[in-house]
Amino acid sequence: MEYLTAKSAGFCFGVKRAVDTVYEQLNKGGKIYTYGPIIHNETVVEDLEQKGVSVISFEDLKTLTEGTVIIRSHGVPKEVYEVLNEKGIDYVDATCPFVKRIHQIVEKDRNEGKRIIIAGNPNHPEVEGIKSYAGEDFIIVESPEEAEVLNLDSDKEYTLVSQTTFNMSKFKDIVDIFEKKGYYYNVVNTICNATNERQTEAKEIATKVDAMIVIGGSHSSNSRKLFEICSKECKLTYFIQTSEDLKAVELPDSVELVGITAGASTPNNIIEEVQKYVRADF
Image (cartoon, rainbow, N blue to C red; front, side, top):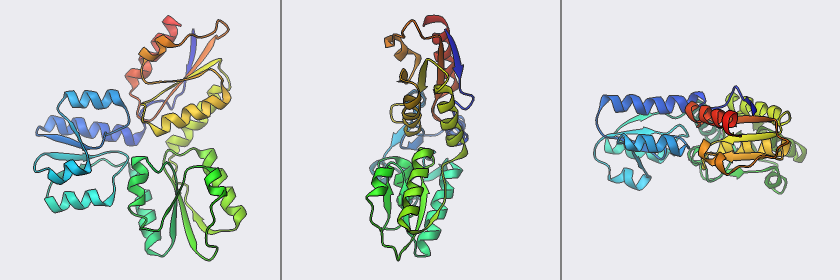
């Protein structure tokens, strides 16, 4: 079976930086914790746990007395920093710089009296962190449909930002809806370039192939968005976590070319294993 792999597949800058940070801290010794999973990939998290890294929650943090805490690539709410500083706990901030930029934009504009609108998944840890900088009067929209039924105060000034891994097409639709409604607002497209490139390339490949494979963690928001995008272009689109999942996939005899892409938290070794499986076993 022939395959076509997206050049943008796999670790993005922010994820690689975060994962490398954990392994660097392991080499220094001492007890290591990550606030939440360092990235949304079960294979990576399990490997770190086997090496002695513990994943902790906010409740765990409040009782922590030793060790080093590494803040995940998605970022964390302001309250986490407050507890870390109050307790004098050592920590390394591995928040993606592009996420940090959103925190700064949101905090600045909120202090200037603007109401913050966040395009993103309200349950995603990145959005949890962003909204902590937005004050109490913020809005989260997850889709153009939600934006369409939103009724905002036309006399109020707003700032619209986005989760870094949000679907670019949906973000543009949301912007168009707000413009149509005539709201007084400032748009800051905070979808990172890596996300935009990954989504664009995945869509392009999905139009050319007979079947499409999207590799990502079960909790990976950006991987799920890739699956959503590819599914619209290629009916035979499969979402998997590792090559093992492909054993349950039976492709029609008519399939000659398979496309492969992967989310920002998928390690290269998993992508390579999928490529080998497609080449040898399909």
